[in-house]
Length: 239
Image (cartoon, rainbow, N blue to C red; front, side, top):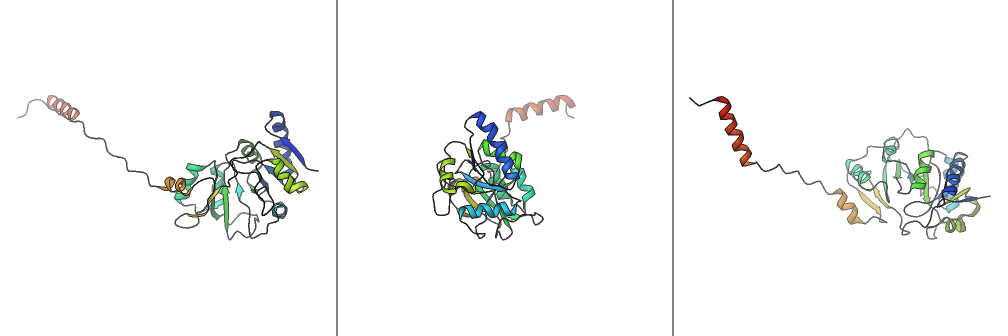
């Protein structure tokens, strides 16, 4: 039977996050709050659990779930050939509502679906989920709803759609504005926007604008003059 924990209450959070972590370690799936919408997720390295997430949503392997990570540094172990512009986007928007599609490390033993050698990564800006990720590590997480229905903004909305397929529901209050994350493909020489969400194209473009060059300070005429006077005094009268 599914368990629900109210993590807006300190006591509920103290019980709920360990319960969710234990469920994930058992290969079960959980619902958790994020800064965009509620997500349904599992251990990213448990192929059976990932298949359960997709089945609960009514989604096929052709739509693999993104992977939530606790810090941008975690991306270094999951992705390869990360372009400089992707690094700038991470620095600007993580934690936050931005998902970056990157080339996956070929040495990873996981099965997220038909990814074509890529992985979609995001660091969510939600302390409850970040605490869980800090304990569990990377989680395959997609929006907590059945395919075709609106994304859930509370755990109870998710439960109405997903029911007993989920082991633990973490309630963290109403999520964001109901907009999903913006998705950028970073596998090529230039970024390609795959989906606009909580971040606008203007936000992305502004973050990718080159830094203006630093201007050298204007010379200080008085300083030059005083330096010249000191130099003449130091060397005595000219011959």
